[in-house]
Image 1 (cartoon, rainbow, N blue to C red):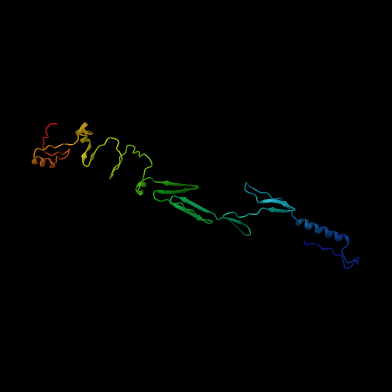
Image 2: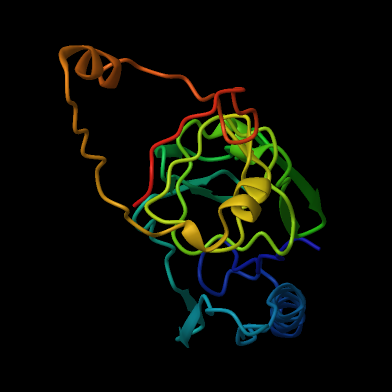
Length: 231
C-alpha cells in the first residue's frame, strides 16, 4: 500500500481538508505500512572451528573482519565470492640439484628413474627401488664396511687385488693346482735353504755351472737327472 497523505486544505480552517477522524485513519494506516516493511536486525555468529569473520554489532550495524593477503597469497573477489590463491613456491632438494614449482594451481609430478618406480593411491605416494642391476649402473662402486657373501660365490672376476688373504686357497693359480702343490711340498713351504755356492776346478766346469737348465714345473717336471753330490 502506498503512503496516504493527509489533506490539510488550502487555508487554515477553510473546511476543504480531511476531518480529524479521517486524518488519524490515514496516520494509523501509514504506521501499519511502515511496521510491515521494517525487519528486525539479528546478531551474527561464527560457525565451525576456523577463524571467525564476525567482529561485533553496534547500533544495528554488524561489523565483520577483513581478509588480508599474506606472504605468497593472492585474494580476488567478485560480487558473490572471495578467491584465495596460493602464490607459494615448492622447493625440491636432492643429491643431483635443486628444482622448484612456482605459482598457483601448479601440478607437481614425481616420476621414477633408473630402477625406481612410483605409485600414487589416494593420499599415499609410494616409491619403489629395484635392487637388481644397481651395481651395473655404478661404474665405481665402493663398500662402506665388510662385505658378507653369506656363503655365496664370486664368479666371472678378472683381477682380484688384496692386501692379504685369509682362508684355504684352492683351485689353480697361473695354471698350477695349488692343492696338489701343497701336498707335494708338505712342510717344506716356508723354509729358506739359502743360495747354492758353485765350486769349479776348470774353465769348462765354470761354463757348465753358468748354463741354464730347464727342469720343467712341479706338476710337469723334465726328464733330467742331476747329481749335486752330498751336503
